Length: 220
Ligand code: 5RP
Image (cartoon, rainbow, N blue to C red; front, side, top):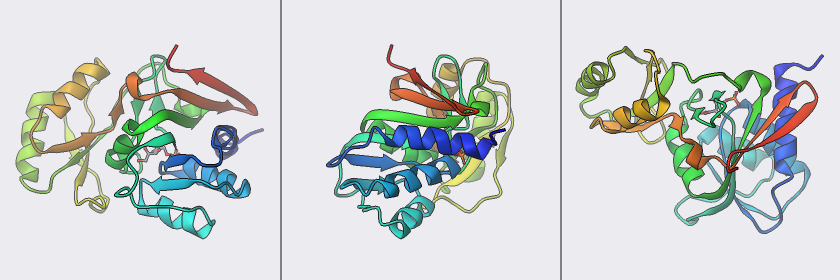
């Protein structure tokens, strides 16, 4: 029987096949992306990559994958990343690894954003927790205003600040509509970025269930 980690590996290796020599590639963060890095390293491709976290950067370098600063790359042929939740209409929740701000910038800069998940990540509807990165400046005030505006709890996560100095919190209240919630969070001064990724960002979701791999086209 396949484990969740087997499914992550299978989805990651399937998605790695879209990467070709000469491409610029955005690399996400997390345990599924760790399998992607293995798959890319095995193929010894001539590619230029940008990492979304220190963790991905270190693993990529150790595996011999060429990574560059995002200062010298302004677009990607493809970005590949994991997710915490994928809804039937291709809303994502990301940020379980607190890297959603950089991940969203990279996904938005890619011609194709391919999401790699094990079967447990497919959900009927998006639910909390929804990760949010806040400016340190005025943090307590932003939490108070967010809690009032979203009409639900906003809880600081016990993790270090992000590489960009942001504080990570989670909205743990009810999610009636992801689009409305995303708009309400974004409209709150002090918010850097939230982990709701809209369907317009997503090109495809590669999901492994057992040993079966499915490509879900998010652009159809
Ligand atoms: C990190 C993320 C990850 O992609 C997400 O948490 C999934 O992680 P994993 O592949 O370990 O299940 O959004 O910020």
